[in-house]
Image (cartoon, rainbow, N blue to C red; front, top):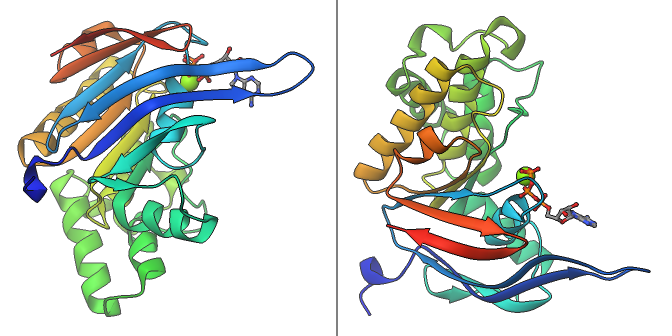
Length: 230
Ligand SMILES: Nc1ncnc2c1ncn2[C@@H]1O[C@H](COP(=O)(O)OP(=O)(O)OP(=O)(O)O)[C@@H](O)[C@H]1O
Ligand SMILES: [Mg+2]
């Protein structure tokens, strides 16, 4: 299969159980493949396993059964270090709360993953970070700290940080959960635009209106996929 035809990310028979006095099944028997350049959303009621699935796809948690493939590559046998390396090089994360570093400027926050990679010169790193901020309408705000930005601006900085390493997949867990409708639409419009340019995006949302803007809606109930609408 040609590289471009391999799904960006696949879940194959993924089940995640937390053992305890009473064991909890977070997700059960999930089979999904997300093609490159697709903007998919995961919807479903609270507690249905949306975040759990996203963490497994993002290699932040491991399935009890089944496996996850990134660009056709099996990840089940990889050690913690190899998984951390894949997260840094292939995945970008956006969460409901931005998790930007409060002491750092927007520019430095966006530059951080590139600094961790350590492949480019300082000049190249800062130029790439600045151009992403400009692309998201934040060119004039690169020197500001997160507390000097609005919620919507912070979330766009967080998105720029998630994209700076040119990840194979961006995973977003309720990225608009904290935003008003105008800013939420802005973020979803950015996702659509990025996907049209080839970026793969998987986002969790409660908002069915926003979900309509995606290429695909995967609905979960009780840890299972119950609908998958393309
Ligand atoms: N570490 C854990 N230990 C035990 N149960 C957990 C753990 N993490 C999640 N759960 C349970 O697993 C189920 C799925 O949780 P998950 O966070 O994936 O749901 P969600 O769909 O993201 O919900 P929400 O919309 O509220 O964010 C819930 O019933 C939750 O209480
Ligand atoms: Mg959740």
